Image (cartoon, rainbow, N blue to C red):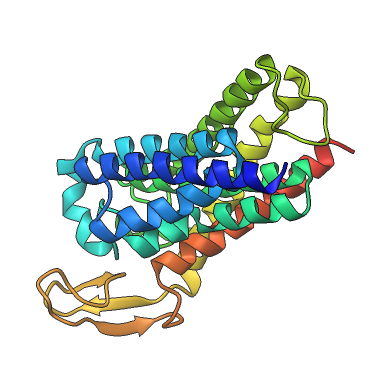
Length: 288
């Protein structure tokens, strides 16, 4: 693809991501700073990856935002434990989509189908983790810490449950299904978004286990990091552990454990790296 074509895609990507980010702001899915983060990520992914990559990003945004609103009143009591609320800010937007944007940049320099597989793994991870969090906290059984299996309170970093794990698999699979649908549409219209392989239904269907397992790998990595090295604070006012450095009422919390720099945004980013690497490896195994 020539330089002017990439420039045109970037302009279109900026336009589309601006519209979507504004819609997210109106729906209270994005904070003001999150609008700019979403525009940056969306422009790069649309502009450098192409429309199929961009539609996968939109699928993640729609699916995750919609699920965040599901039984919102029930989950509100647990929101105080999480570092961020339902409205994504700038850094949260980068943590969720920043790796995807970097992969889109890399795909321009070194064309290979493995980049799309890695991108799919990253997006499947952030979607699967969102689904696990949003649905897992509704489980009637208490979650168990991923490191030792001990029961913990709902919303505890590193806690997993049967419902949450099922939601993880479903979240990754949905991203895979969305990618498959868009790639088949692109192939029907004469395009070839997945370079280097035959864009047949049988070949493209391999992306389903790639996304599902990549999302699972990334989400479990998120739980493991949350249970071991993510920074955790203690709220003396509420007598609870929390991811927040400062409580919603403005009171500072006491450092309890973990690496001080490894907040929830970094955990999300690193887990998406794990999901991307896992998905790329699975794609390689399925195509050798």
